[in-house]
Picture 1 (spheres, rainbow, N blue to C red):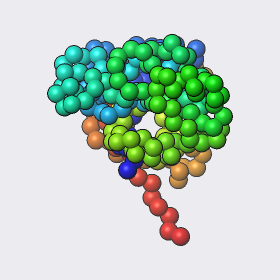
Picture 2: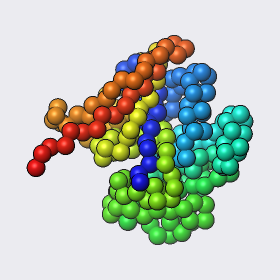
Picture 3: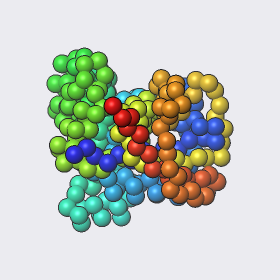
Length: 231
């Protein structure tokens, strides 16, 4: 069984998640940070792409002691399993996600990843190899499901999220829209990549809830399953 996938992103009023230099930008505030921490604590795993690791060096840990304590009472590790999708094994051995906070790590690589780099990573994480040139996301989800992972929160970046959506692997999306404009045609959005060309192929969403938070708005979406064409 594939895991249930929840995407969570914060973006500017013009739909950007960072500047064109890929610098991290503070878009939401403490109230939203608490919400995200709670969401993370309720998941089996949290996933990011290698671009997010290289740009932001996140630890992907649960920050609140209250939420860590809750997880311990459920017989869980303090932190969800940290998953990095990294086709060519570019993750630095000193990356925070590999060191900060106790718990399991998974690095997903493709067949083109250097075997020597894989050997180094295997000392710090479980390495899953899937796909030839790029990580095969559907197969990765199958492998994660086989590991007992049932619920995954995805925090970025745009290329990974776009790939998951295109592969029909996303179930819910939370988008916090902040009161800033970043601008720039090269600034990343939360769904980068090639995009969709035909309107008939556009992923459809159902808005479940919209709430004002601080100086922005939080929108909660359900991804509508694609209509299956009759043979």
